[in-house]
Image (cartoon, rainbow, N blue to C red):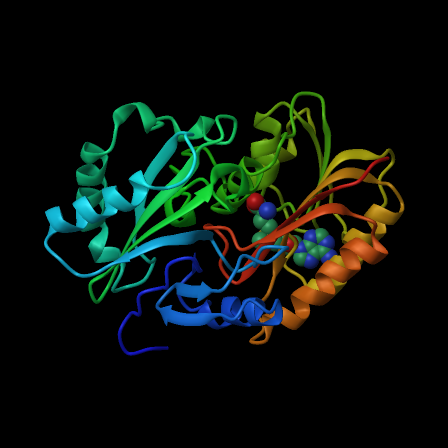
Length: 340
Ligand SMILES: C[S@@+](CC[C@H](N)C(=O)[O-])C[C@H]1O[C@@H](n2cnc3c(N)ncnc32)[C@H](O)[C@@H]1O
């Protein structure tokens, strides 16, 4: 890790990740031949954006400009100028973020002030205030990254290609008061990125369901849930009319009917979980998959390669995404689907 944050080079890609995961992100980019460089806490640069995108990146932007240190108005002026000459006539969603690190987080107020100052200098008709419509309207996300050591970066990515619509991929959520576990936020964030979501009447199987955060969110959406876990569910879920608790190991369980959705948040070995999910795919037991894979080991990427291979080659899961979401810790979230 460089002693001081390094500015990225214009034209290359700037990635941000969970602090402490820079080496995993670097390794993924290196394996993809994207010539990465560590810039500082939670920041990595690469020559290009690989496909599939790196699992350990929360967000990635093509670097428009690295601004030389300067007074706030000078920075705002320079940022607005570099945004003004971006190609295309589509709308912009302007956002700012700091690296999610002990030295980056205190810069949040500076980042917000810069965002406001840049906004004031851009033509208001080009600015899309409702970021929720960014994909449909062909908008570009234009991100201002305010990092330690005087590094300020303007980056951009089309919303429909973005890993996350949240600034720097930091998808903050208000903790639901009635939610039985913090895990529920991981599920909500995972569902957020999908083209469609589980809803009324869908049959969902939730492997590793206890104490019931995910099951609770699915029931709230109107789904029927088979919750598979040897551990106890919250009493209000155990007695819920649309929840069936199967109190056994997920490895022993076989569904009575194919499910619309398979969810899995089992605290178990990743390769064995991947094999279980592959079995569900092969047997056509579910159409959609959302699973959280635990990666407590030091060497995470070799395990991820095998997890991907097992799900796609052995399980026949399609459209696989693998992402360390904002709410994920030593884990990643995978999504996929299958035609039945
Ligand atoms: C992180 S917790 C799940 C949290 C849950 N998603 C929620 O929102 O409340 C992991 C769960 O995996 C379960 N688990 C571990 N091995 C399992 C197995 N073989 N079959 C089913 N569940 C298992 C544990 O009992 C534990 O409840």
